[in-house]
Length: 427
Ligand code: SF4
Image (cartoon, rainbow, N blue to C red):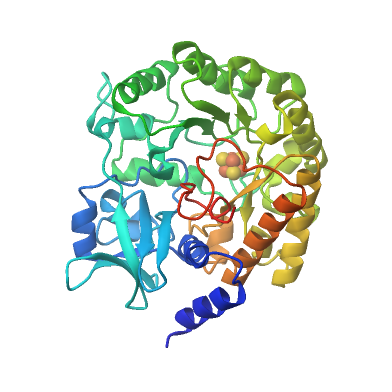
């Protein structure tokens, strides 16, 4: 039996209070997945990976010999198999060298394998009708308004680069700028700054045929000076303002920007956005300074945290949902040495925010090789950490008797659609 099988089975039997689907999902997210040629041939007829913000891959496009970047699906749905998996949606992070592979069985079933042994069945999402459409300027809708989370979330990365530039400013786990460059090199339509008109036209098209989307996210890189002569708040607020004017209340509006001043946060609320995501990325003060040097210098950790609590007074605590990147606190050379230390630190942050009614959510760290941290930590964080975090997150959430975070669709194993970590699967 292979070591990965042994590890996964050992963790499934140690964490009996977690769904086994969530353990496999976390392992897929931290390790990535490969596709056989046959599986890629099938997936080409389904909803493709749109590269909605970062690369979220374990290899750069230049190393994808089968052209996976153009052929792989956005997400896979796991079900059945020998463990009787309930429907579980997982974002596809490509890694041709992964021990996980999507393949076609001898009987023609689409399956997930781990070390060549079948784990469960796999489904791909049907391509939505609007994915076939283009805007009047010829841009594909997948550039302007792709959807993730099995069609639940319209993802509007309206500015595809970040003004934190280079090693001394970019968040060390982030490949937004490198990914932008590789997508441009690959010839993909990848609009740097989307106009409000483009976004509205795309939403018009989607609105004609779609009933699956329940929310939209407006996001992009940080703006430290100005963009189109607008400050960060003025640039990003124009999108929810226009969307809510044209489609009042049709979707739950979310904005992912930096931790801004209270009056600036109020602008988003007044624009009609319902949820604010000022992502703090990592809790430990020393690691925040090292891993988010730009944010530390321009805003600072203490101010970032106090602004999160200010925002809770503007939006209501349940509607302020800061993200952290789960696992980066174990990255070498600066991270914690042990899983327990890392979990204790992150749980301190969870407890702090949840005691104020603010529910952080997390994205499972994908050690992208084009980021500083991914390059030096290709293995990511241990699976044991990710399983432990799910337990700590769920238990802290339960300790403060909080409701499932809004804007993520249904909660619970078999129902959740959030695809870049399993926190909604364990509620
Ligand atoms: S602020 Fe950090 S995480 Fe966000 S886009 Fe810029 S470099 Fe990436």
